[in-house]
Amino acid sequence: MADLREVADLLWGSGGSRVADAVFRRWTQGFVFSEDEPTALEQFEGGPCAVIVPVQAFLLKNALFGSENINWKECSEDERRLLLCHGLCEILEKAQPPHASSLCLVRWAKGKEQLPGEDDEQDQGAPNSAPSTRGPSSAAHTDDPSSDEITFERFHNLIHRECVANPSELRAAVTELVPDLMGNFGVLLFLYSLILTKGIENIKNETEDPNIPLIDPTYGHGSQSLINLLLTGQAVSNVWDGEKECSGMRLFGMREQATIGFLTLMESFRLCQVGSFLKSPQVPIWVLGSETHLTIFFTKELSVVASESPTEHARRVFKSFDPEDNGFILDSMLEDLMKTLDLFADPEYVNIMKTKLDPEGLGLILLGPFILEFFPEQEVNIPESFTVYHYNGLRHSCPKEKVSYTEGTAMVMGFHEAGLSTDDTPVKSCLQTKWPYLELLWSTARAPSLN
Image (cartoon, rainbow, N blue to C red; front, side, top):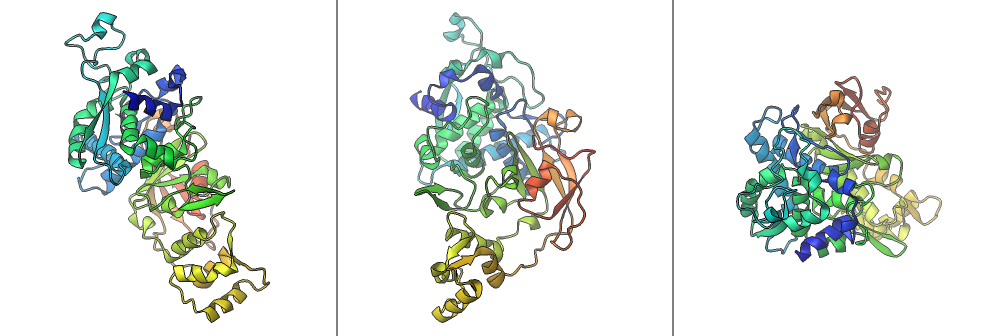
């Protein structure tokens, strides 16, 4: 029980019992499928997108690129539950520390499955009482009062942790748990399972400030650390590659290429810079972040996430020599940089390059001239146009208030081709942080919303 209290403090802040009822209630929903799109999860209120959207991304990954041969547009109830199960398990397995001997699941404690709101005598353990959160199945959200009647405190009194030894046991346990995960508290049950699988101390060590809760206690939004944990298994607070040093502090970002990508509107405002590990994921699925919400952009065109190009690799390595992101390095670092990139680095040749790249003798090597000298723009084998989709789990943000995938056509142009401007929307601004000359044509009258 103590570890669940620690999870609560980590998520909601110490003294979590003071979490506003309205904030906690927004998180009391399950993984519920839309009535209008077989594989799309629905979000009822703001906040839990930090969990629902990454789960949706992994669900799509398995539907589009998995081995199950499931038709993602016309799948059965059993098939979409299977996709959900596989996505949840994949996230938990990514979060498991390398030398951990088990994975954790949080579920309703046996003997405490009575309906909420029953009198104290029934709370003592009525023999045939039903679990409260097997409420809505995958069909539609219902206004079941049970989610209102289970308070923050009572929720933590009704749950307990279990451990499984390996991925096969995990899949069996999650399959059994799917009805609860699709019920009113499914998102929280999974989130608590993830925190315990990763380990409370591991999360505290990875976040920049362990005293800041993973869920904002005022507005209920998930932090970047929480989003990163769901997407990559790392609870780091930043979206850049590797480490950076700022005022003597080491700040950590992504360690390796992500399976699912992440782009943020904040980069278009120059408030941050997403690294190539998140911008260029293994599959063409990106979580898009606005100021307050998460959505998904995806395509079935695998060529848009081809292996990291030599130019991208060179930019990433250059930035590792420039941890403060100044856009330049000292000329004394040039030889080591060239050696790291397996370039010819004879001292005499390095001196020639110093003179060429720094003709004014300032002692600085700029990123742009370095890339142009050694890694001139290479042809990118991306189709002239390809079909794309956008997902938003909030009904009121979707066309006709139906949660379904919005289809469109993307065109990635070169600098000299950029002339046509199809729109100027937040979705496009967000995507242009990866493809500067991207144009989009959507099948709907209005472009999809990031909020």
